[in-house]
Image 1 (cartoon, rainbow, N blue to C red):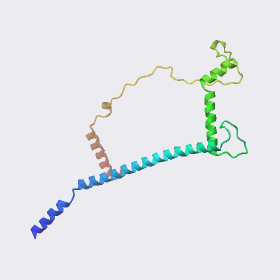
Image 2 (cartoon, rainbow, N blue to C red):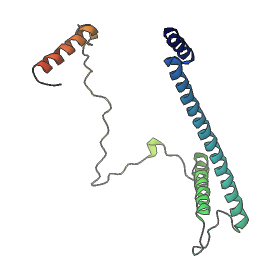
Image 3 (cartoon, rainbow, N blue to C red):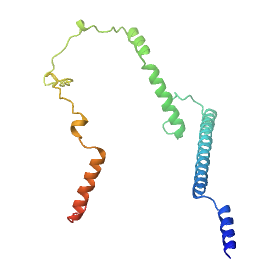
Image 4 (cartoon, rainbow, N blue to C red):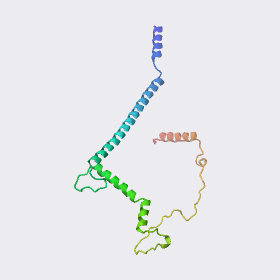
Length: 182
């Protein structure tokens, strides 16, 4: 009977996996699932971005096909205007505003109008009654900085880490013995 049990045990041990191999297999499967999910999420994001760009192109084409006026033209206030067209009109107007208010365009317009850059000696300041000037911020104190001697860690900690842990355990055990729980 003993040899049969011994033989069964040997067969069972031969086919049984070591615990670290079982955990390794579980970890690999979990990692594989995470990688597959990340790949699917990246694929979904890429497809969504492409679809969004294509949809925007289609909307633009539909507006160009159905629109009889330029985006800079003022439409009839009573007409119903799609939100996409309004957004594009706003974007076009913002672009036009940016082009008109950039530094070079402003400089050319001012020169054409006859304006000249003011020199500091030509500026005349007027006293306005009741005006409270804004106080200026004090960026640095007038007093020279005082330096404090640096404290080195050796001055603060004169125990080793092991001594500190033992002291902490001793304090906790004293508190438990006296009936006060931490």
